[in-house]
Length: 153
Image (cartoon, rainbow, N blue to C red; front, side):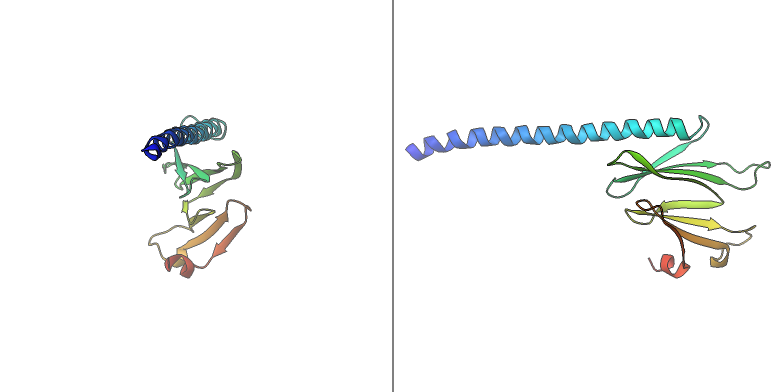
């Protein structure tokens, strides 16, 4: 009987401490999200215009965020242009920034972007009319890769 009485006395404080630790970690994660959202908002204001429609695309583990704005094709500008900015969420700094014409961009993996550039005036899209470029967001290394690497994914 004495064991039963002592057991709840030990368990109740432990459960209470676990509850507090969970609440604290949720607040920390929430604070980090608020901070990165503010940094993203400031980055959009300072790197894009009011007319830009900016997409915010995180990588899978949300360690980097890709900000992309694409200009529409018009008779005055027959090519599309994209402006990209990459943010490191941990450091809250811009790690890569550039503009490209006639291109599409997406995450290749958690650290690299895949840029697909369409070359020349394209009637039919073939592998010869495209260039594939990997951009490493940690090192800023930009390298063209063979279409076989991309097509085998």
